[in-house]
Image 1 (cartoon, helix red, strand yellow):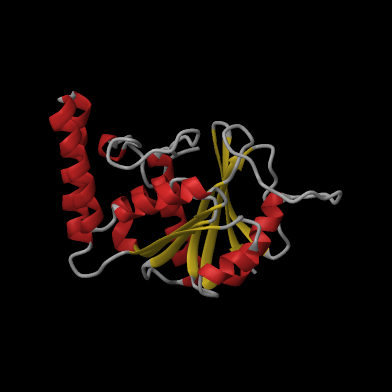
Image 2 (cartoon, one colour):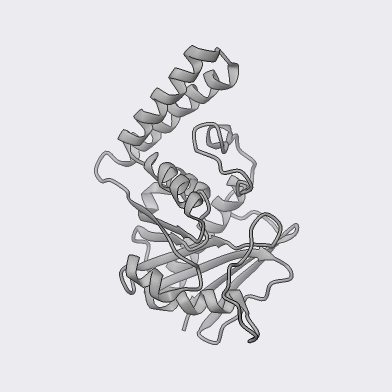
Length: 252
């Protein structure tokens, strides 16, 4: 894949998972440059297809620790008005809420106090670097939230449970879905016992239909084995990135 919107690799060390943003064991961090590229392609598709560039509501139904949601808000906050994540794992949702809390000054101040305490106790270079990064992020969030605050939330739900999702998200309100779905290595789809054939991506796309806005784009990142298709969606773009595949769709 050729990077169209992020042609050069930048220094994303301030966004490293586990430095300021909280990490979750067993959930690898999504690459920052790739997340930025895919998100900007979503924005470009919204503008091209729907002629809109208004700040979007961003949602991930398989958010894990909400790491890439939080990073995207830091990098592209001027294009985002609301960030929501959900996950079937209760522990992941708890970490997701902490990460999304870093998109506000109160959450960042608490994190800076935590890192400062660790630095005083252990005098590690890693804590010194984390504290410097926290102040960089604070300056960034301060600028982004000068005139408005991010609306953020995370809740527990199975990505294929449309009813649970609709109980937590207003109907027809989500403009961009960006999700890195389970590959079966570090995470797995959770389904009820059934003898019927099951396509988790089809089921997730079906569950999303009720919450998608009239100007929405859905970006799904998966491995090559999983088929992204649904008769209520049209493919906008497909990208191949190593072992990953990213598919952008619009509802029809």
